[in-house]
Each structure stands twice: as structure tokens, then as C-alpha cells.
Length: 208
Ligand code: DX5
Ligand code: ZN
Image 1 (tube, rainbow, N blue to C red):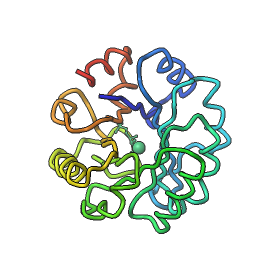
Image 2 (cartoon, rainbow, N blue to C red):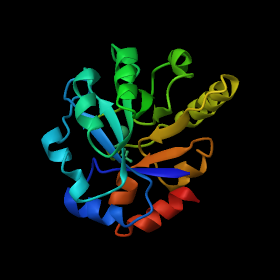
Image 3 (spheres, rainbow, N blue to C red):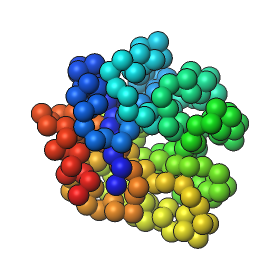
Image 4 (tube, rainbow, N blue to C red):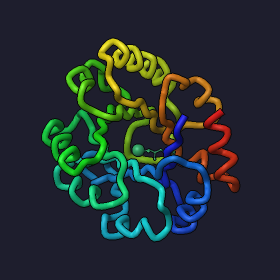
């Protein structure tokens, strides 16, 4: 199980990133929010582009924005492994084309109430499916229980389509939830890790 750590609830970003950099977290999950697709706004790119000063971890970028095409080229210039756009957006295919053009792995994300069959036309092209287990827009929320069945459904779809896409689950992840998400490849966790005083131990518990 790979772990991608979200710093959305961090009260001391530089210090938290430095501390995360010495853990075995696989990715730093960068939540980008424009105040339109979701009501909150995240730190601007001109701040995030300095993230390399505090971590050399690969970035797992999650665009929660109305117009992803305006954000992709900026985030493609960082140490970026994935750029994920929401399937509820317009121009999803053009966004995925642009991410691919930069040689970066593509992801699509679904909000908790979005029917899973919207995935069908993307299964043969994306590298990552980010299943939201909270309403996007805020860290520190409660895990939505029926995500467990959704993950099992998506795993079945991927097997049937012989898709290479990874399954990532994002929001409200903690130790007991992680136990029920063995079908996932990546778990995104923020508050459960950052609210503790031993980031590595929390990550260890999620991986068990
Ligand atoms: C929510 C974000 C998630 C969130 C995860 O909109 O996309 O990545 O920050 O953090 P926790 O684990 O605190 O829910
Ligand atoms: Zn996220």
C-alpha cells in the first residue's frame, strides 16, 4: 500500500514538509482549490512552487478547480508524478491530453455522489482513479462509509477492463478505515498523520 500525505490541515507547512521528507511516505498530495469548484482556496502556485526546498518527494497533484486547463502547465513544472482532474469538470479529455503531453501520469477523481459508470470511458487511458471519501474542499472530515463498496466496484471494473489504473482513496483515512480498503493501491491521508507527533508511526499503521 502506498501512502500519499495531504498537508491541507497543516498549521506549519514548512516544518511539516521537512518532517514528512524523512518518513517513507510515497508522495506528497498537493490539493489545489480555486474557490469555484470547491468553496475554499488553497495556497497559490507562487507559494507551492517552492515546495522542493522542503521535500524531494514526488507530488500527487489533486486539482479541485473549475478550469483545470489553466493549472496543469504550472503544476507540471514541479516534481510531479500525477496530476488528477475531476470527472465532474468540463474538458476532461483535453485536460488528460495536456497532462500526458507533459509526460505526467494522469488521474481522474470522482466526488462521493458521482455514479461510478462515468469512469467507463477513461479506464483504458488514465494511470490513477482518485475516489473521494469526503466531499472535496476541506481536510479533517469524517470518512464516508459507502466508499468501501465503491472501491470494490471500481476494482471489479478495472479487472474487467484489464485497466492498468491505480486506485487511490482520499479523505478521512485512518487506521481502522485503512483495514477495509485493501482493494486500493494508494491511500491519501492528511489529518490522521499531521495531527500526530509521530508521522512515521501513523504512516506505518496505515500500511499494515
Ligand atoms: C479534500 C482533499 C483531501 C484531504 C485529505 O478536499 O482532497 O486530500 O485533504 O485530508 P484528510 O485525511 O484530513 O481528510
Ligand atoms: Zn485531495
